[in-house]
Length: 256
Image (tube, rainbow, N blue to C red; front, side, top):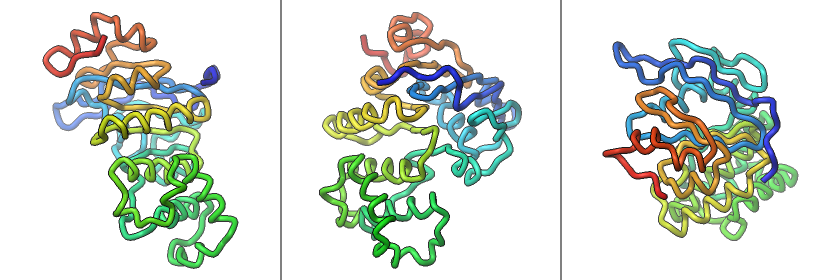
């Protein structure tokens, strides 16, 4: 995995989200550099998914600023952020079960290139677009099932397909919200290996409960508790931190 560059691709400055009197994210500061896998961990209800939603543009922040590649995108729409290079996997992208693997990825390729979705079916005869889609399918190891209807894939394969669709929009930053959720041990290992292969090519912000996956992938970890970052450090520092272990008491144990 290549060393991250010093310039952040994504920077959060004092990000706040309130719902009435409830403070869900509490003045969150965070930077994410090219080649870095920055994991956000914390107990259930810590505000991790809300934070991802704020970054993606699905949830409007009450305070703070979001910068993408040095540009203030705080007030941009989800689509504008995606066009600028922010890709969110597993929630913004969605598999269409009646379409094949190839057709699903072609939709994402068309989106990236500004094609009109009303005419997606003839695009299966466009050699250039098909070749682009096939490259992403191969990247996530689904080339053997690219003609299969997505609804017939295993759950793990559908996760891989969603990742291919996210990569096909050619993002600079990947937001991955619990990519291991619902996967069995073999599928989890497959996803870990896929994400390891992407290391160094993207800036990745990872929200994940599977600590084996976190420590296999992350170059840096931040711990979110009641919406506030209480600790940041390397995976080894986080593993050994008394602050982190206290944050997880009663919820889930950080593996040794």
